[in-house]
Structure formats: structure tokens, C-alpha cells
Length: 489
Image 1: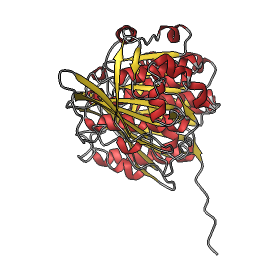
Image 2: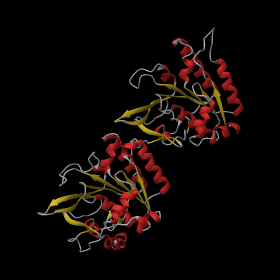
Image 3: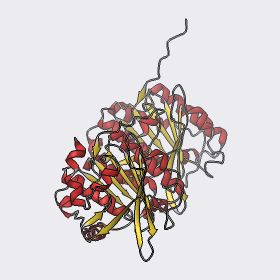
Image 4: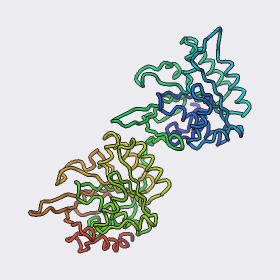
């Protein structure tokens, strides 16, 4: 009879997103190796593990071989971790074991003295965690690969006997595709993390990968992460199953003519793509939806990569859409940023933090085409996939706009980055040559879970809003809002 599988005990890291990748946390009472180049966040990871553990009732010792204890305390304070208070409370001990670079190795020097000091602090505070940061600085003193290995095995045996959950951090030399100077450490450790700080398309990004995890499953992909004001935030997509909420009841688009084409409006919790060339009215449709939602006392988070809040609000006033009341009543939150200002990972964390604090019912992103300027088309795709995955899991209605090239729009993939298949409704706006003037037309290409018009309809942008002269004779934004109650029934 086969033996019952017993999962190994784990210690939650409480690092945002990391426990999901590690399927529970670091192996309890075992060693984890974190390697990476400068700026990858090795020290931050160790500090966060110690501080969050101390706050959760697991005291820890932080051993630093490179930075001074004062610098460690300042760095921790910048992320909201009060190390002096934790030290005073007997929950954290910092051991400064720095070398000034002028040491001379004499006789049979080993690390037993250091381990005795660390062990004394661990016993004093009853530590259950230990971090040894920049261990490669200590190993450099020996200058002999054989001695280095001997001392590392001595350290490994000591950690196991102590029963503490440990993190050892070392620098990765020469990049990920070159053998590490201390590659044998990866064979010795039970869990190995590779942290990478790279530049792609002139934009700096960070990626984490789990190389191995003895006795446990783990997420095998590369995962983007950022170092923010409260530590490391990881963005995993590790679920093999989709957990999106089902589409809800109809909600008005804010335009009666468009509602008629959509057989009542957008489905709640759906993702809607509005695509068209410049000037066709994409932002107007998105703003009309935001105005109508705010009048229903629903919250809208508007992510604008095209223009400032003031410019957007002012521009919409000329078309009869006034978003100022929504801002005053805090039913509308506008978050603006230049796409080039930061990497896609930082843009994503800003959006997620806004969603956590504002708790919107709906989200507007204007525009997909600007997201490519975050670094690359792949970066834009990753950003949008993660963002849409989050809003679908939370049941948030999502409106995406995208600028496409050409007056007619053509038959190209309307998101521009292979994204159209994951959206629930697609609206195509285009210009048409009407002799001596240029007209505008709208077409519903698809609308999942709902019937919709398959005709191209003309519409006009006027001082009173968007008018659909041939559509149920309900021409304006205001008339569209009057029909919202019918769409909600």
C-alpha cells in the first residue's frame, strides 16, 4: 500500500505574491538561496522576511557582511519597518560582520566564531529565522574554492542543527546565462531563487524565478516584481484555472443609441474594447460611460496614458460631458502617467494599489496603444493581461480604448497586440468619406452573452454630446442616461 504523501512544512514569507509562487512559502527549518545582481532586491527580500516574521511572532537574526547596521536600519525604515523598535522588543537582532578588504588570512581561520555570535543572538531572542546577506563577501576572504566549500558545508550543517529557516543571499556574477561563482550553493540549498534586474527597451524591469524547491511544487515561470514603499510586490499568474467572475446584468453605456445597439448596454464584469483611429470618439464613449456610472453612484477608476486629468475634463466639456461632479463626489478617480516614466510592472502596481484603496465598480484604460511605450509590445501585453485578469476576478467592468491606424480601420487585429480574443465586447469606430464631409460610424463586432446589432450606424459629435440620428431617435448622452433604469431591470 503506497505511503500517504505529506507536504513539507513551510513558512509564509508574507511577501506579496511570493507565497503563491512558492505554494505556501519557504521550507521551514531549511535553507533558501537568493542570488542576483546589483539592484535586484536580495537585501530587501531578506529584510522583509525578517521584519514580517518578527511582526508575526517569529523573531529573526539578520547578518550583514556588506552594509553597516545603521544603513540596514535606514533602508528598512524607508519601507515602513521600524528595526530599532523590533530590536528593542527582542524580536530582531542585527549582526554586523563586515570586512574592510584589508584582512589577512592567517592560520586555520573558519566561521565557527561567527556562528557562535549568531547562535548567541538567536538564543537570546529565540530566533526562528536567520538571513545572511551578501554571503559571498565572507567567502571571498578564504580565497580558496576548497576552503569556501568546506566552510559553506559547515554553515549548512549548523543551520540545520539550529532548526532555523534561513535565507542566504549571494551576488550572481556574469549574468544568468553564465555559471555562478558559487554554483555548488544551488545544489546544497533546498530552495533556490534567481532575482534579475534587467533593462529592456531602455526600461528597467525585475524578474524572479524559482530554480528548484526540494519536496514541493512551485511556479516555474519568470515573474515580474517591483520594490515599492512597502517592500517587494510580485505579480504571479500561477493558476492553471481561470477564476473570473461570470458576466453580470446589463449596465448602460451612457448613450441610449449605443445601448440599443448592444441590446441594453454592456454586461457587468465584462471587458470592452473600443477601437478606432484618432478623432473617432473613443475617449468620448469611455467618458460618457464614466459619467453615467457616477450618476448611478458607482465608482470609476480612469487610467489615462494620453493626457492629464485637467486636459481630459476640459476636452469633454466641449461635447457636453461634465466629469467634474463625479470628481467632487469621489465617484471618479483619474490616475495619469507617461507610459515611458516607468516599467510596466510599476504601472501595474500603481493600478492595483488604486483598485485596493478606491474599490471601483468600473475601470477605464485610455489607451492600449500608449502601453507599448512602457518598453515593448510584450511588456504592454503582460501589463494588460495581468490587469484584465485582476479586474475579471474582482468583477470590475473594464473599458479599454485603442488607437488604430488608417481612416477606415481596416481588418487588422483591433487591440494591436493580439489582445482582442480575451475581451468580451469589441466596438469599432471609423471615419467614412461622405463626399464633402467626413462622417463617423460605429459597429459592434462582438458582445459575449448578448445579442447586438450587426449594422454600422452613423453618429455625430455635437456640443450636446454624441448623437445617433438613425437609432431610436434618442440622440444625446442625457437621453441615454434616462434609459439606464430600463437596462438595470
